[in-house]
Image (cartoon, rainbow, N blue to C red):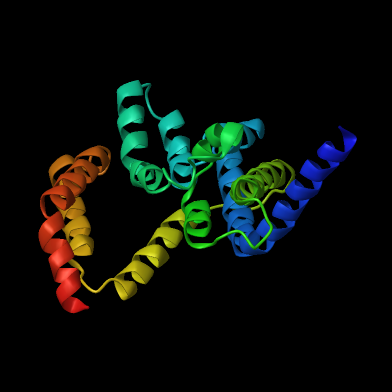
Length: 242
């Protein structure tokens, strides 16, 4: 019995050691962005445990930044639901892509589904566990480590925000800057720019039509519908550019 337990423990440790190096780049980004979120949350008038709690239970970087605004706005659960679904809608496609990989992971599956963020998806979808290492435990520890980095960053940021007095004006722009960088990288990688131009154009039209306080849901709904309708032409355009 002890031998079996020791064997399982050694297998888990081997998986943890194999997973850790792949998560180091994510560690740097998550700690910085998490600290930014924690400071922003505290400076917006929330107690330090708010960012710590949302990082554990929500674990959605862009959505968590949006939560600051949602919690400060008049109570509107339908709007909060719609915004959350729109922002995180890409995870539907992540989930479909991971059906086969997560098929035989056992009791770890519920947490691995919950913790599947963009960065975790990029690793578990493209990296195979090294020889002799449990594939399911490798993916589990990638997921766990990534969330631990985010929780640590958010908690440290909240504590710093309480203890250190400094001008935080402009700090909440960090998430905007991140999305700009992601957009530029995607623009450079994509062979066609139809989807990017649709996103920009429909966002501007929604902003003009609905105003800065109400444009988000119509814009994201219009983008989702347009991409669904034009999926064929977009894919053909990408193939021609290749």
